[in-house]
Length: 133
Image (cartoon, rainbow, N blue to C red; front, side):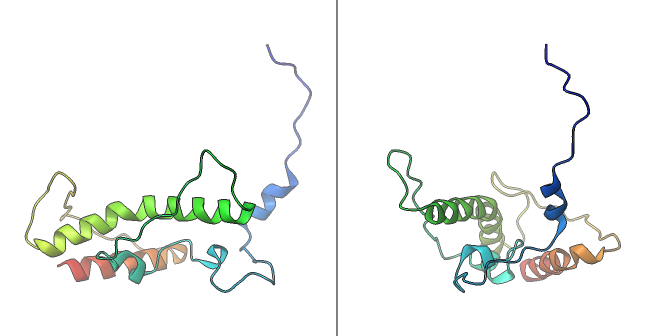
């Protein structure tokens, strides 16, 4: 059984989570910290570039914390985008295709009224649909 230590206090850092990220002033312009949270259309449409994800060292130490964080950011980003790129590649090769082992085609999809925070995602989705059709 756990102990009751009285009322819990809120973590003061939680308030910062909703604030826009401001990178340190000395952040290099090509840093992973400056990449947008949502992928740019060019990153999604780059279907033919089989970019090799960085190595994930599990049997030796990383050179730096920055290298570790960059590599894991890139691994997670690639993991989230690979399926979408594969589906786009498949639809480009067979525009009139139906469902396959890899891709499911949803054709009865409508758009609800967009919220301003999702405008970029909706624009990307609309751009993807337009190019695939």
